[in-house]
Image (cartoon, rainbow, N blue to C red; front, side, top):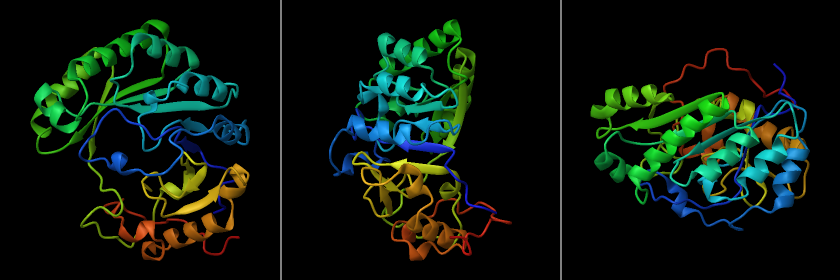
Length: 287
């Protein structure tokens, strides 16, 4: 099986800001700079991948709504008729003006992370966020999207934990009635969290996805909070040259063979530990 000529998904960390301090997220540990990606950098990534049917995700380890350029970024992406756009957000900053701008720019998939049906549960998981404002603004976005025939899919997600488990049924009923798709997810371990041990298995992320940090560096994985697996720098290289480059080919080969221990970032990662990998393609002989 050949290495794909380009990724299907590209994530771009346009800034490193967040309006929440969730206990399960390492966002507040980020030390990379600048705090905001230069305009010429994100434009270069988009320009070099136009016409390829790519889905862009203008966020990474950040809250995308903290970047007020988001509408501009989306409109720039939309100059390519083949492109799609997805966003993941906690929703609190989505006032009506911002919601209309995002819808008018052409959002395809909108995912809200709302961990709790009750205010008490939510407040313990999403520290720093206003529960009522978050719920009201999410509901308003769903209504606006329905009125304007915008967004092909709207998900409201909740991580399943001991605290949220008793609320799952109510959560699903509420958001389904509101017109969104309720989704229950599992809490994953970020690589290099205390106690995380690597599993010697392949990884599926390297086959279709590409990730750019705020400084323009490309990383192997969206969970690379401390730049342990840099595969290139778009300020000095073409986006697709990084994708097909020697470093990325080497990492793909190791991961196809399940040799996570040979990559610093992956040497303490247990992602996909319960997944079956029969027939996983080998890249060892390519490039």
